[in-house]
Image (spheres, rainbow over the protein chains, first blue to last red):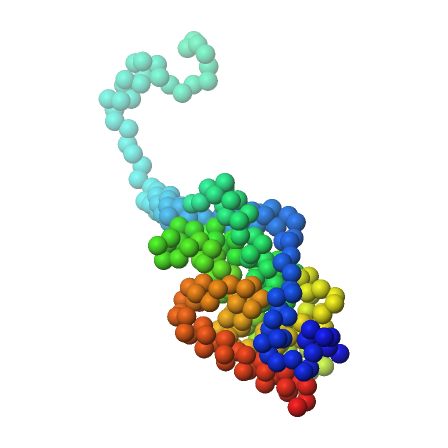
Length: 100
Length: 179
């Protein structure tokens, strides 16, 4: 049942006038906190595209290097001169402290 | 990126405007709260794209809010239609989608609640532009020039929208009264 403001006999302008009786209401509490939390989450999840590309290319480079090393294991022959120097300077990889 | 202090200032200046506008569109306090939240997140994300020479900050925020509300209503109507079709063609196992069509607008007071709620629902069923014209001029009491700016249209177009909206509302009211 309608009341006197939105009565059946009223024309449309009068009815629309009644809309002005709708009051402004306060926004709910903690809305700003919720908004800030949502903004924070958005930026946490979103990693810049440039970073993603940098990470991907670095990973590819490392994998490619590893594969290259595994596929072609060329043994390097140690130069005799180098061996001589190592021996002369006692640069051996021995765990003993003193050369007895 | 916008600084936190600037964003806080924008929020405090426009919070009530946005929340109430959302309420007038969606007629549900919880939905209006969610949309208000989305609106301010969007303001934060797109602040660098805002052009002060094109529109005032208030107009820009209003436009974002209106677009969000209309999208929400559209999605709700689609969901409702799908739910209806499911109820016809779907099996018994299909779950019905719960879409309350009642109004939960804290600004509508008890004295004239029923009539106003019905009128608000009728306004909600108007075409988008007519709905916006009615909400901005009749509920929010904005001047037609400001409404034209928000809607990015001419003053004459707003007047025409209002006339058509009134005509449609009159028709709806007469139909509901069984005239």
